[in-house]
Image (cartoon, rainbow, N blue to C red; front, side, top):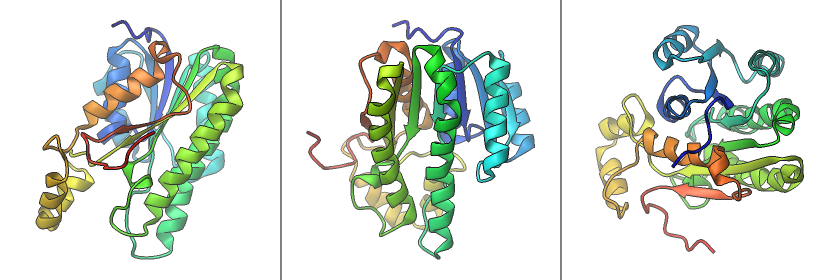
Length: 250
């Protein structure tokens, strides 16, 4: 299937590793022009070189509102517009202190809201704009305890749904993709496998498909939703978890 992504202009945050990197790779492979950001300048440079094509990138701290917005606006101008925005940066889990709540609020929620607000004019001008927000199955089922990460991902699902109704009439679709446990080298589940093997194994046993997902599999889902091929899909929270969650989705 031709997803219709050739020469589309995409911005992906937090795209030097893991899910974000896989999304940037998939979009690039489909012929899109991609701009990425992350905090580590060396990692951004390396990723841009490896992605090739017309990929660009910048070292950006998304918690710094002015710096982040300036980079988004500059990048949109240099690309001649934006067709796709993928909000991927996340603060991750943890319950060790109140700092996690502020961190996840700034990284998961505010980074997404600021990105959408900064890029909406360009996405509307595209006429076929698409926003894909990376959520988590932690937002829809119990997992690990009352963590800020779970609550903030739930907030993003709500925000995405509300925003989708607000901007669809102006040519912009908004969706969330919520991955279940995703394993990759250097990721959280690799760490858990080494430090909490029993918890890791019990989690795998709960997956009917018998294995955790990969960043590439999530990227396939995101790329479809971001593409014109998904023109009827907006306001959805697409679960990508190999059957891990057990709720009935109506």
